[in-house]
Length: 227
Image (cartoon, rainbow, N blue to C red; front, side, top):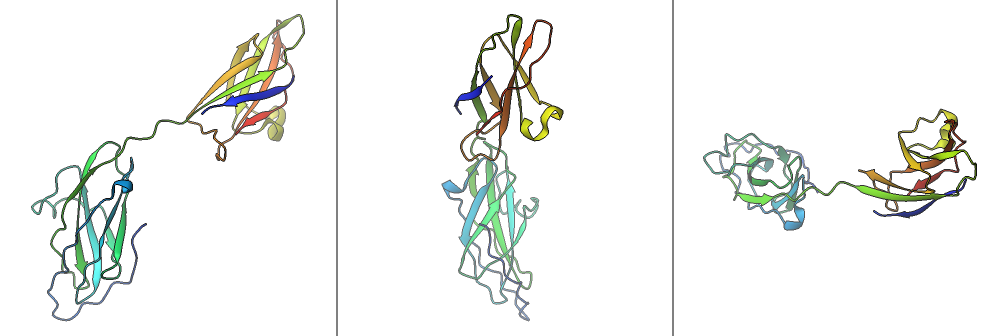
């Protein structure tokens, strides 16, 4: 029995050492102006950019607030912090990843900067954005074909497939999936949440067996795989 596959369908921030406090420095860092570029928004995160402010004592951390509730100067201090990121060189372009967001959800973001003395800047402007929809689940359709067996007592075929190779494990192989194919010598297998495109890191291996009216099963066919 010869089995073949007929078709398959299918920045972060710059880190520097914290600066020491200049004696008597009570000057707050300048407030930053933030933005989220359209191409920086995904279904689970966003990318925030702005220019690092200047301060006599050097820069400390950015306090980042991310919320599904509109952020104002009144609630900025009480909202839970989404991270304290080390600051980069004053005047440099900063980029901060905001991970762990939910798809198709509106978020508000604001940032404050601190310096080496712990002085905190005024709140930045507030940016809002909506995360994108989650990508559709992966799905791969595999069409298999094999030579017909000629035995008079043939009762049908079984397609067996797995993410490990029968050639590696032999008769000890436990097949994750078994699909009855009746008396047909073709079968269409739909793999949910599986990427069978060229270059994919996932591989699915297939064999076919025949069985007779007494329930006896043949040895496996040759093994094929996708991609």
